[in-house]
Image (cartoon, rainbow, N blue to C red; front, side, top):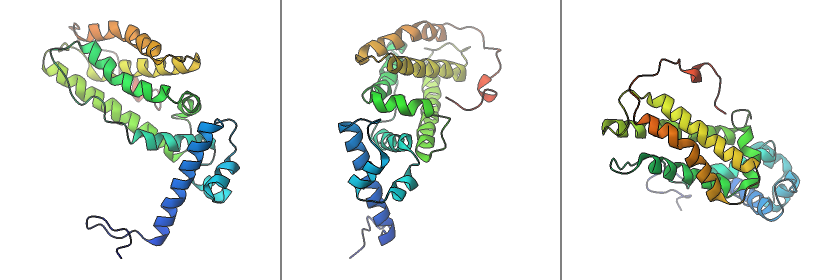
Length: 227
């Protein structure tokens, strides 16, 4: 037997395999209970009971329920295709911006109860799964800058446009719209996406017609961690 080896990789040890099995059981139990009973009505001890592991084992992976919810989001985010990968220089820039942001908007909006718990913790919680969400957010912002650069190369975005500043503005508007939609208790996702389009329309048009480079210092370097 190869102990679970795949494609020439070293076999997984018994300890690592059991650890992975426990983590999968905890994820499955948390997802089931949060879905059927709700986040606030689910005690961590019930997650441990359903997963058939000790309470200490659950606490080792997540110190609180927010950590458990973040764990599920990380797993789901891994299934989400990368954003800002292709461009159409002949198509409306605003439509393409919204098409990309709306995919991740829908991701958070389809799990409103958990999103309302996890999103406010981003940048404030000492949790490895929250950190992974923050890392993915940073990767998404970097991809957005590179994506806008391609439009700039095709002459769609003005040469004087500061792309880091443009990406920061779009990202801030996106996050604000998600939080606004969740905070209002909305149920129609499209209304939140239309609100996002409304707020992004003027900035995107400005990116295409700017003639001077911004002289405003990069505030991201002085305002601390992203929220």
